[in-house]
Length: 341
Image 1: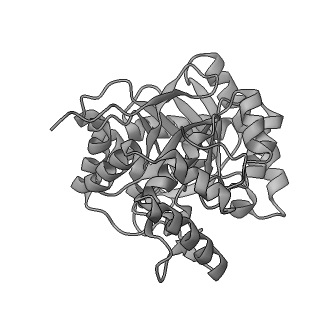
Image 2: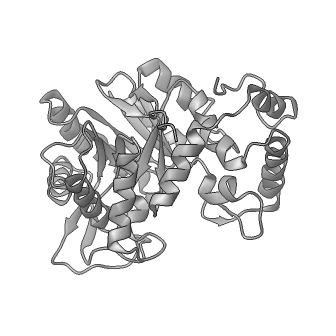
């Protein structure tokens, strides 16, 4: 059997970092939806590294630190070199305070998390992350979850000001000192990406669910701004919580909830075009976002080595240019939409 082609690499905006077009998103390793077997969780990261994935994204939020512990274990067991580690600030761990509910993780460590977007809070958060990961350097540091969905409309202005006056200054100082190579934000809302991009000097932004084969609300304003300012975009949620992977099956999830009828109908139309060309919907959904020149990497979650292998294979499999043309001719993509090829 011929050796698989290496995963393509792209520059992360104007930062001095090259990342693989496929990254590993470690949120599920924090026991997000189910308690994972420890050995399987670590083996999943090892499979990504062995398969040539060179970007791993994690956060203190993911399992209240458990994701970082598992990533660190895999890094120590792996012979892979040149791995880019991304984690986040905005929450600090309080290990002796007792964990409370609210993070959404069914498992994880018994440690409390507290929002803290201050200068000192960002510094403390990165120190804690380095200890959990077992590393002496963090490549990408992102300010996490400064968005309306997390904090509500009434609190977002105070949180944004705190982040820009505190965490941003801390990360800017660390970047200037060479302690981190790239700084940015990680949120679920394109307007907040745009707002941060205009307010500061950022290298990278991780945006979840807002630029996919199904919908592209980030296209009008944020993506052109990212290109203009040299911000490398990392995309999460390219399956819109599942429906672009499963198709419009009963119970399909869209943005973490059952998909409404109009979404089911649109996905069914996209899937029909894919089927005509013999391309699985999930393959088209995986490859589509890489057509935009601002996109540096897709940060994909997985909970088993098999899932990682499937993602690597789907990224490398062919998608004919006529598929994208047909999606445009049927009004499922805008005529000027950037596509792979």
